[in-house]
Image 1: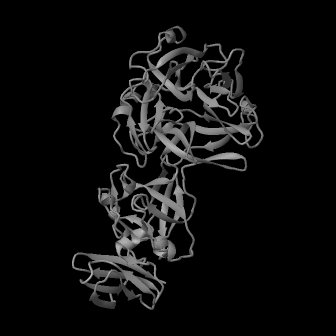
Image 2 (image 1 turned 180 degrees about the vertical axis):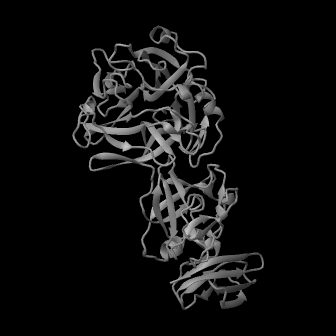
Image 3 (image 1 turned 90 degrees about the horizontal axis):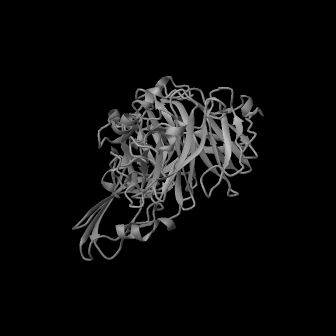
Length: 561
């Protein structure tokens, strides 16, 4: 049975008090045996092992906040449990939550250390919003129980809703293996006449924490092997098999039945992510968000929530912490619609990384290379230098630059996808602050810096593939917004006329164009009309344009093709 002693005694305290030391996912994301993530309104919820069933929520799948309440008030539990699990003390294990019949069903397991005398119960609530007056959990009682002589240990429930409307519960731990049974969606209990089918493990083997998903014509069973709950000494890993029926038989990639020891490895320990376990899947906005816990090797083995990506290849799922495939990209800020830009476009070491107007320049294109566990090296196409946090700083306001690749933590960036399915958060491995545009600036040339996560769009990045050479036309760039800024088109063809419309008619405007090395290549001073025109340089390249009027100065990168 599960060796939970080290965490049952201290988990509640860890969940509430553990300082934020890990990178990437932020807030109250400490977790053990997390439920499948579930959304109610604008919030995603996670429920996890703990006194009373601990809950946390997020509006974006990145920053987590402790719920003000547990499912059952701490120190209380439904009285029926005492008859089935003598010695139960209120520490519920491995809950799972599902929405059916207009309400939320919370399945929970009750047991004691080292015993198969266990039970799974279920409660319902019309909402998960703990601030709502409707937030009340009504316990429906026992779903299934087990004794010392039972085949399937009644813990670790996971609910699967099939496309045909049928509902199944998989459950089990060590002892008699993993069982699957049909659930009556009208009652949340085992369907009348349904029997439990053993689909994996048995004979006391190390199987637990099952979960069934479906893709195409196959059902996939995920489960854990190894041992949990020993911090960095945990040996948990996730295996999988597939079947054409939710009740099996499930076989692995080699065709071996999971009841006979089969099970292809889906995910094991890697880096700080030790003992991944308790697979769950949320499909949201076209993305597959895999929830599980791990023991943080960088934080004394404390259990935490992990959210990974899942895809399919050759008829089999794969789990990865990489959200972006290796390739060439432009990275666009969701607030300003400006892109990562090696400002000055020389590719030189120490050049600042800012946000700039997309002009299809090499200095605006970035090669993303996975380096393990969801971290990336980000390389500028002009010169091949890497995105770097200056001096490996961790303070708010620390700036970004180009620098030669040193393979250190201030050059490896964790990329995580938000619940909207398109936005990403970038966090250097050297600290917990995220890559941002300070002050939500929409001005080209604003340097990228590290800031505390605030959930503003200025910290969210859209990552889109690009090519070494894309077609560029003036038409899509001459927008009303650009015209209001007063300078268009940009890019401009060499020798073509550049339109400038700033200042009031009858006022003098001075136009200067500089090369990237600071040399003045064009200057002109003339009375303003509604629009004045100046010739673009005859040589293609990147220039700096400065326009001075009586009431403003505009400095802007000018691209000449």
